View 1 (cartoon, protein in one colour):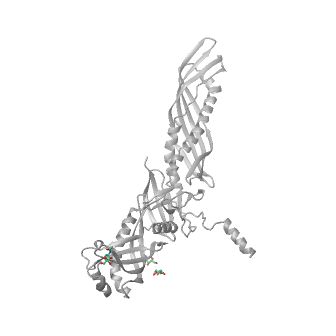
View 2 (cartoon, helix red, strand yellow):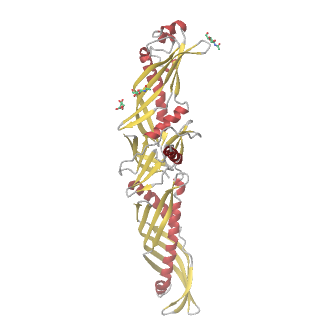
View 3 (cartoon, rainbow, N blue to C red):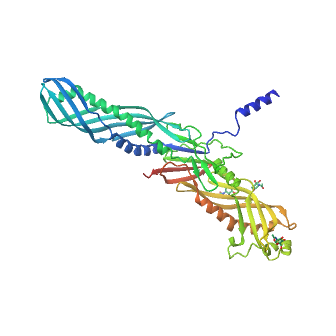
Length: 474
Ligand SMILES: *[C@@H]1O[C@H](CO)[C@@H](O)[C@H](O)[C@H]1NC(C)=O
Ligand SMILES: *[C@@H]1O[C@H](CO)[C@@H](O)[C@H](O)[C@H]1NC(C)=O
Ligand SMILES: *[C@@H]1O[C@H](CO)[C@@H](O)[C@H](O)[C@H]1NC(C)=O
């Protein structure tokens, strides 16, 4: 008795419905990071061009002149290059960025006053070379489940600084060597890391564009917020996203939860996206709840060339009572699911099992629908899935179906005798409409103006794997 209470207490502490297993996983590889570096460097380069070196002035003893009052003003960057940079993964933390051999050229004006009354002035060019910058970019999940980055650690070091004075005497170089050089280097070094931090935090508005709630259609939306902090290993950054369909504005959990799955260790593409059967089954749950998986079939949906028509004459041939009680009437059928369909991913095979009913009506001349019978339907379809833009789309084909009699209002009959009619209805009326919807696709997680380049989709056990390169349109 006591132990039963303990179990109940534990269950209350750990609600079974709460699960942090992701439904969708995204893996960013070194190759993806490398592409990010290329985009990032362009941003950082223009950022660093905004370095403002403050005016400088002071008094120094310079041999052989003695006390010299000097000032450097109007310093402007004329050139800046970041020819060598690399990014790496720091397991558990984030991304390391290192820049080497960078250079900056500055132009400015100098002015000196010495021996009490002698004044001189001119311009100068400063060449800073061997500049190194190392920074760490910390990556985490923000309160909305989107990724967020920050600059964790930054060091900038100016290797060499060479100055060329235009005009003036040669002892100016001594002045530079003894004090101004050091001060200038320091002033430049101090400017760099704040700008690097700024460039890094300017990534956040882009990361915030992750479609954490992707609108699908009038019934559904998909939640793509991160359910776990990003996992950074030596080879990749792995994101665990919720990947769950919901009815719009009504987030009811399905009676099943995502199972753990892991993406294969691949690295030839920039990005891998794994979409689990949990995600697709949550779609089935949502559309079934929304009543979206139902369809009225009318005679005009059957091709003109078909001898089988949706009328009481066709059905009367198999069920005499229909011909007797409802002669010469058109018919209508309602096909709908009674449970969420179940989607199964096996290697190279996507199967969808749907359970529902088929209700047949005779349409009275005054428009009243007269129910004739209800069949229980069990259908299995195979799906072909593919990527279209930033969406996963599909097309299904019938594998098999089975029917049993639910209710008859027209006496007993052989359900089997209706097989061909139902096969026709499924093939020419139901599946084309299902396919028209599947063809429109379902949005994948995406950031900004992202395009997939040569995406490939493979179906593995319990999930589908999309391997792709990406391209951002500016
Ligand atoms: C997929 O598997 C189902 C059930 O195991 C089977 O009926 C179907 O024929 C398979 N489809 C393909 C294309 O192999
Ligand atoms: C429609 O016609 C049927 C058969 O003639 C009749 O039973 C039914 O009451 C009619 N319904 C209405 C609303 O007139
Ligand atoms: C539907 O068909 C499948 C395969 O033929 C079978 O495993 C399943 O039990 C059937 N379900 C119902 C409700 O008839």
